[in-house]
Length: 395
Ligand SMILES: Cc1cc2nc3c(=O)[nH]c(=O)nc-3n(C[C@H](O)[C@H](O)[C@H](O)COP(=O)(O)OP(=O)(O)OC[C@H]3O[C@@H](n4cnc5c(N)ncnc54)[C@H](O)[C@@H]3O)c2cc1C
Image 1 (cartoon, helix red, strand yellow):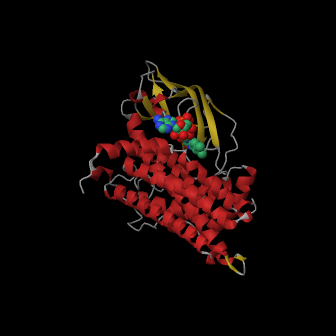
Image 2 (cartoon, helix red, strand yellow):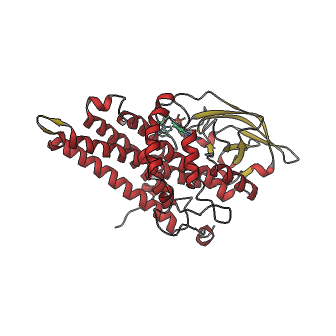
Image 3 (cartoon, protein in one colour):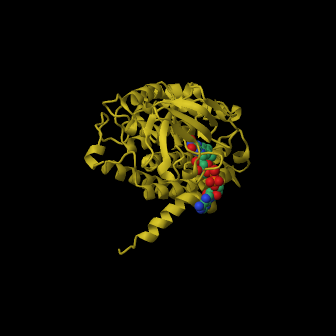
């Protein structure tokens, strides 16, 4: 696709905050309060997601012709940031409903599919992406979920997916599957499966360490019957194209991590100002100040780089497929920074940080997922390392 073909009409203009402006302060505060309950009860944030959908931030990247607003990558990331400062769970919903699976449908889905998924997304259904299998995690191209295409063109899907964010609550699943046993990544295409179809069974949702409020379920396909119209991307270059768009989701996840860290930093700063020991605020101690300074440097530099990667993608007309190496660098930076900063915040709070009454320990657990989900830090380092070694630097 040329740059011009990639450009989309937007009804939001160029203001990076145009999408986040739709998020209401009262709702953000109420969602932050509910996050504790989602965490304790390991329950789905159903009502909050419906409320989020009513603001118009879900499905905002769909084109104006399809009924969306054509939001840019930067606009989505700013909305993700604002939501995630209050609860990362809803930040992740904004990611998946605009980037990743939503972007795959918006870009490659047929007209009926685009309209169906956008309508559901607007009603608070977060589309899900199903790549990982019990025996194919980092080695995603080794997946064995199989689409058998018969002579009449009908499709039948068999296999299993695991740790799928949104399952079993989500209605739409973008499933990466191998067509007719063709080996390697060239055998992989993308199909759309729907929750209510016969031939899909959902597995028990485990209690994950953090980010509770969104389930991580498994799907088993037993001769799930689909038609040609359910194919999003054909094998051949389907896997490559799908993974190009997956980079938008990775960048969104990096922003959630960054905001979780920023939120923990804000709490730690406030506590350091008000908690007194030895007759003065603990923040008066140089050791603690330096710690907070390092945390602030960590957050600000990560955020600045994230925004640069998103702006680069928007400027080059690739809002759904930001540069993979830049994305890998941003995701590693933000994910590892979030673990450091949330842990630093817990340290500032002393015993209160370790106590589950305050949200700090939850933020530590929430932050832990980002070096694993969406490509581990090690796999992303492999990508960055390869790129670094293949580009001689002359400046
Ligand atoms: C909260 C959460 C949400 C998720 N959501 C989704 C989702 O919505 N959809 C989906 O499809 N998947 C999802 N996943 C799955 C996720 O993408 C995988 O966990 C991830 O790709 C890693 O696969 P794995 O867990 O099988 O680890 P493995 O691939 O088994 O790796 C185990 C360890 O070995 C390391 N390793 C493996 N190969 C190499 C190598 N070549 N070089 C260096 N190190 C290596 C890894 O970095 C890791 O540390 C989610 C996971 C989590 C935790």
